[in-house]
Amino acid sequence: MEQERLSGPQARRALKMSIWDGFFASVSDNFLGPFVALYGSALGANNSQIGLITALPNLSANILQVPGAALAERLGRRKRLVILGSFWLRFIWIPAAFVPLFYTGYRAVYVFIALLTLRGIFASLTVPAWTSLMADITPYRIRGSFFAIRNIVINVAAFVVPILAGYLIKGLAFPAGYQIGAVGAFLAGLVSLYFFALIPEPPMVHVGPESGVTGAQNSSGFKPGLKGLAEMFRANRKFAAFNNSSMLWNFAVYVPAGLFPVFFVKTLGGSESQWGIMTALVSLTTMIGQRYWGTLADRFGNRNIMVLTGVVNALLPLMWALIGAPGYVAVIQLLAGFGWAGYNLANFNLLLEVTPDQGRTHFVGVYNTLNGLAQSVGPLVGGVLADLAGIRFVLVLSLILRMMAWYMFKRTVEDRAARRISPADLIPAVRRGGRP
Image 1 (cartoon, rainbow, N blue to C red):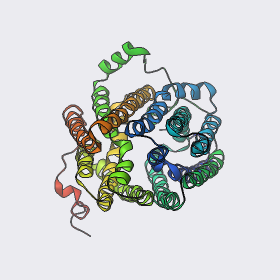
Image 2: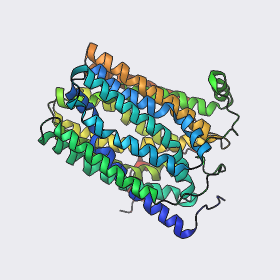
Image 3: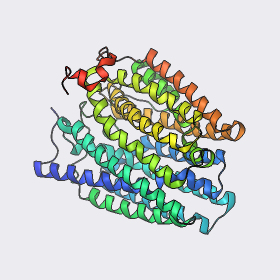
């Protein structure tokens, strides 16, 4: 039984403040987050540079997670670390949006990329501390239901804000729309930090196997360096199989990642305001999909859900490659939100299953770092290939690589708890014995 670290009133206050923090953090992230590739394109970035806009922030946001965990462990004051890092990563939107007032041409593009990379560094240092604190304030018995509610609230903001931001960017002359969006993102971020600061902070401790999310700990026996990594994989083959297929999958997914908004506007003829709507549609079906796939994952295992939704997600770039008008993207985005809701939910749960209880923080840190590298290399490759062969070629390549990763996962990753699932199990009415 997990020991409660906050009194009843403190715990209720912590959970309430965490929901408000998540809502305004989502407002902040969605003012400019969905439009960074379009902003870079407006600054003059080519496809290769668009790849850098996606790749370098991903790299910086993941490669320092293990040091970030060690820093949180050493300081012991997680709230202070999160508040400090979060303030600066939100503040950077301001100079990023005002780049065209001071720079033009390639200088503007690379200054923008540098600022985004700096945001990733601040995020990388705060994520382990935030994760550890959330684990401590959320009772284990209600953790699943609490984060389901919190995610729904976050997705409400992720649905509304991109639509408003898209119309703002489209309606005002460049760069005024981006600049106003940056100010809005910063102010919403400050409100988020206000609510986060009201969360009571329990003493930082090394939790037991039930939680699996703490600061750095050495109980796993993990040794630094390539030799230590190889020993970890040899001793934990389930984790190794899961990680290896995930690295190929993340590389495949991120090859075209930064190119979708550029393809939507420049090739299909869509607008920035329409792209805001398309981004919001993903959040709409994500809210529906999380509840639907969560129930199925509890009954039939996370591996089955990843196999099913992996097929859908693998086919998404092919759908993009075949369309010729922006209106069709709405259908693809609705399908993507529903498919990714199940895949991401099951992926996180399966990661906890294939990592050992002892020292899970190190395993998760290694997983995030290696997959972050894959997410960084993918956009670089995709950007270069898009300049050489076109974006549609990159989309087809992503399809092929995703199917290879899906097959690798299906053949090598096991889940003994999984039950056989039939097509009838996917229909809610049939699952309940035919009752509406």
